[in-house]
Image 1 (spheres, rainbow, N blue to C red):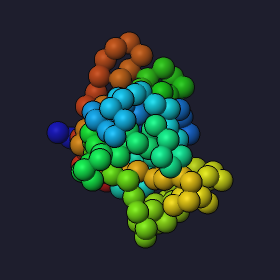
Image 2: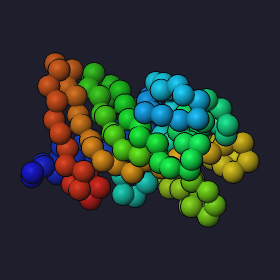
Image 3: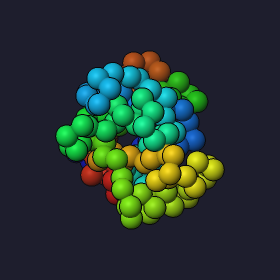
Image 4: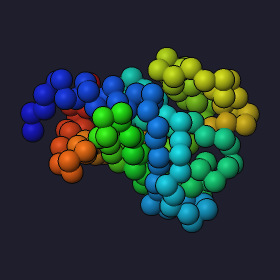
Length: 151
């Protein structure tokens, strides 16, 4: 599937972290699916980074008790009424990956809680499997994950 580079750039810009995000999970330690409000940004490959308070319900929902990845969907509301839906698998990052991810997060969205990653806050990275753009009129556009990653 060939995607317009303008469309992919538009979706990546909307997903970069400046707009509110909600994450829903398939399973997690809490058994609750969400949706949960979450602060997010993108790494260089367009993978969402989710910043949460360590051991709170969102962190626990995104963390599988058996150390496997957790299936998750990140929904991002855009000012024009559209929504971005990014589906994939969430992994809680440990050092040294967490520190590098905090720097990538800060490049898009510098927030003070990034200083506490590993000591009160945690970062999760989503491996992207599917990206969709939902228009305000109900139309959906599937975005090729490879085109999105190359963004």
